[in-house]
Image (tube, rainbow, N blue to C red; front, top):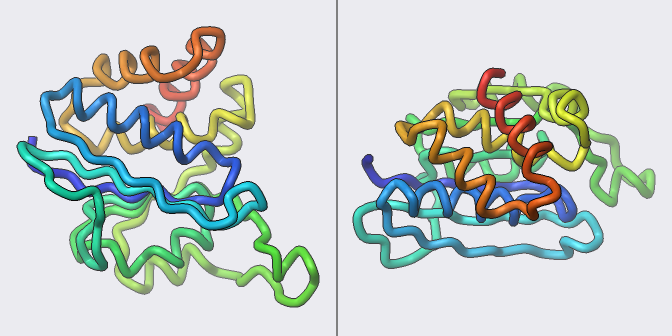
Amino acid sequence: MKSLNVMIVGVGGQGTLLASRVLGAAMQAAGQDVKVSEVHGMSQRGGSVVTYVRAGEKVYSPIINQGEADLILAFEQLEAARWLPYLKKEGMLIVNTQKMDPMPVVTGAAQYPEGVLEALRKAGARLQAVDALKLAMEAGSVKAVNIVLIGVMARQTDIPKEVWQDAVRSTVPERFVELNLKAFEAGYTA
């Protein structure tokens, strides 16, 4: 497998950190050196959260600079737009179609912009939009959006499906494993 630079972006409480752990576990199981760095703002208040995951034969730093991300996994549309400059020209943007109002929208000081996905496409992003919230609910919990998105991303890699499933088993608390495997499958086949 070639090296892979992935950014996982969302807002606090969406499970981006668990998603980065599953991704890291799968990459390590595939024999890659993995570095993970969590950078987050006011995550407890729904603020922007970004996690960098870099994997390859030898990785020295977890940080991904603008224009270096092979893949951005966005848990929310505006976060996809915010981090788009980090995506390589040939990179892929996987976006949950869910909209989460940022504080200026919640307070009435601004409106959630229309046409975010269309703007991302016009900007030249190779975009895969998925209603991960719907798929998570069908799998059994709205909290499984993160694992649905990991399933969608897993299809874009050359890592075998079984390795990803083992990463879910080894990372998620035991009582939630079956639910999360179902969510992974929903994303994988989306």
